[in-house]
Image (tube, rainbow, N blue to C red; front, side, top):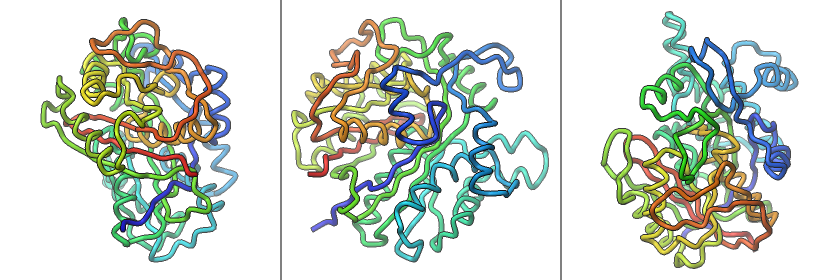
Length: 379
């Protein structure tokens, strides 16, 4: 019999707050981190994005370390991890692993033309820097698979624990808004000229954002916040940046995750979806969900609060979804107005009370990757 696996600790660093509680309070109020920015060092024209104030990062980091060698992203990741490592009491021994999840990592280091900067842009160096700060005894593991990275890292952690390699795995996911990321999405003509509106008729694309999120995946039931009961990742091999128009990869990922969880689709009480607000992503998701008879399950995208935080998004949104389950509340899909996909989906238009036993987290990304994870409330 496979080991039961749980998420036992959570934390996040976002423009809405530097812990889970402040983020939930902001979401309940309807606050969004997406603001209009006029920063020519990032983009020549004004743009909407969700960006964390540098002074807040540096001030918070100064409270836990006097080191000055860490990059902005490294500080954000350390800030996300530090309280959960401290609060968990888990010994960082050979049975405790560390997974770092990101899409772009320290890509901003490449702005400086030096061998040291080039070296710092490597993802393994980023992972080692974070690992060494906390003095993990095991070799750090990097999960980098476009925008499914954050939730895929949870799948990887679950499987490693069930393979009896580890008892505890700390996972951190993060990305930051950079000139490289902004110019890339702008080149795809995928950026919205207003705050994003997932699943809406007049959606015009993504708003980008930045965040770090951290969880402890563990066998410890005593401190469990949620149980991980099924997962799957499928690549639709459709296009480098466009998803399968039939949602094939997402459809199969969800189908497999439900099969492992041993529940039918009608048991899903809530879906925390990817919902980037691009024309093709939202349409593909609606098609995939209908193919699985999930069109009536309440669904939201948190991109209206955070923007698309790339490799952090799947983990950050899972953390918020865990609070939904344990606080018995469904959060609004901010920015949604009039349905704009061809198939019916039950978008949450305002915060409401609900009893949630099972929820589904999905994510999709460039290169055709799709990940689905099913969670169960801890009884």
